[in-house]
Length: 96
Image (tube, rainbow, N blue to C red; front, side, top):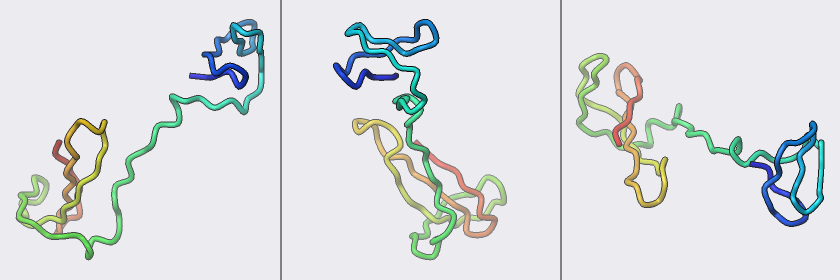
């Protein structure tokens, strides 16, 4: 969503420009699209040695040990997501 810098209302596309009900209009490409600002979840690729190792069955290679960490990937009232990385084959999976 694009917001008006004057009144903070929602800008709507019209005639090739982004226009607001207050009269503001812009065809500026520097407007920030709030929907596209979503944070991407970065899965850890290094630092495995600092993570705890727990007993977890890897469905890829059958190994029984995996690194373990948690991350809040959804809204605050939802539980954390648990991530696992196999010690042997380095495949990563998650549980909600």
